[in-house]
Image 1: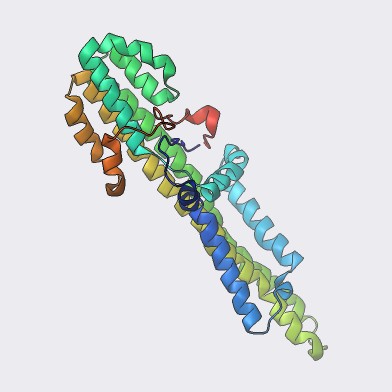
Image 2 (image 1 turned 90 degrees about the vertical axis):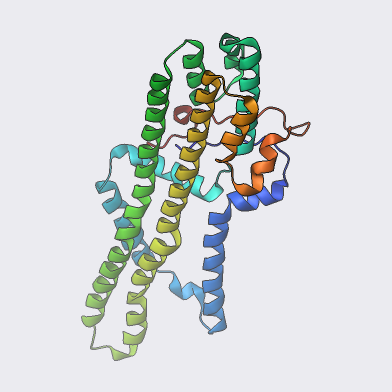
Length: 295
């Protein structure tokens, strides 16, 4: 699934948790506001619970979405949703510091000296790139191999996001379908006018579920996955440029300036400073497949 670049600096953990869980906070906050509005108008939230509507909208959306994608996506949909809710924070600064340290060692002891550091790297992407450097591969070949890795990762991520976007497209339609089915049932009992009001109001709950789930759940998850993917692609591109610069023997100071262009403005100063005592060297992201690759 998506990579998670672990952090090496000691920022406020509360702030980090808030940023990472912003999707869950946004969705939960919106639902709370809607329920508060219902209570302020004198309504009862329990009146919005309708089991048949739930079955039609969510069951129908699940079936239509799975019918539109591959079987492998069924097993990873829960993982990608969890990723969107929990969020990730990619630390470009620590990765930049690591690249600069490796560049310093390569200029001082030679490229072959980097082989001793490969076993300490947890990120298979970085390890593969540096191994190619140590093996004396041509820079064009290294760029081609590593860029193919990034492109493949981006394609898998796009499928993950598309899965939830597809669900967001089906949900409103299934909601309307549920409402039409309920209205047909209402029209069959026009001889009981006293119950028409309650029956008609209940019929529209399916539309509420469909439109609400699409705009408050499925589409936000899809958009969040796209954002995470974009950040991960940018992160891998930064590592790629750092690996190629190490191979070319670029000045570590100039490399730091080059990698700084990939770092968000608010974090750029941290890339050049040493990590705090507990932070140590950055802990790169684990490889996609064993961690949570959702494709």
